[in-house]
Length: 186
Ligand code: SF4
Image (cartoon, rainbow, N blue to C red; front, top):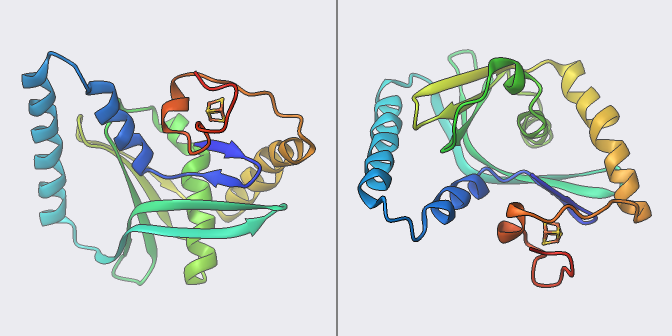
């Protein structure tokens, strides 16, 4: 996720770009293709066995919050048999712990994006680590999602708008939308 004074990019697609970028020029091509095949197989198996109803994929959503635009492109939105929304965010990197997933800002911002678009929060958000076929499912709590916005994100937004945010250039710069105009990029 990158933050700037025009918005917050929570796009899951950037993670996939990172995967391809990280492997560009890698001589371990057989391993690269083996990983890609495994992730594809895991994804297709999940599609076959998934009983929920598809709503949208790669869905771009945004809303105004605290003087900026929060946006994201959500990999997968579906509804369960009761009509409750669920999100799936596909990951190509290494799995994270359930505790870390529970505190993940990105999926809670996604949840707020869904609420703005569809009128209610999703009940669940799943980080699906395809390379390891591991899911981390987070039960979305209304208060927690709002707290992340108000108590964690908002202070950062305020500092950005005041011009007080220090640049942290690094590997993230290659997929930053502002790298062409940023004097700090690496
Ligand atoms: S190019 Fe790097 S340092 Fe500059 S805004 Fe983007 S991520 Fe930050």
